[in-house]
Length: 168
Image (cartoon, rainbow, N blue to C red; front, side):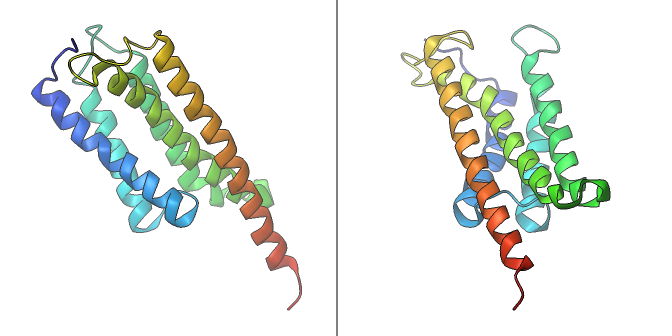
């Protein structure tokens, strides 16, 4: 039987669904999460709300790995949002931007998959914490999807760059 969610846990889960849904929508519609514009801003603020609300939750009674992953995700998004300003990177800037935004989504999935699989279905959860084989498998699948997806994104960026370089 899963541990019931507290009121803050319910609020945190609702807030955390925003960047998940926005990220999925952006991947399906645009092939990436844009760091700017309406989608990018909503993703950023959803992630920020998710991370901040997580600080009121802790099974260990203090700062835990989920909090660290959240802070890392925020740092990665900030790097992605500023990557086009890094002139020294030249043509690598859009790749860094894309990598950061996609990696932030992967980071969001780590505690999300762990918590979801450790609580659902409520009567007999699929997993039992981050060390359970079911959670490890789900995280491996998420990692593989990230790698394949980022590879696809790089191919799209390369094709777009090659198309811009050709004379009209």
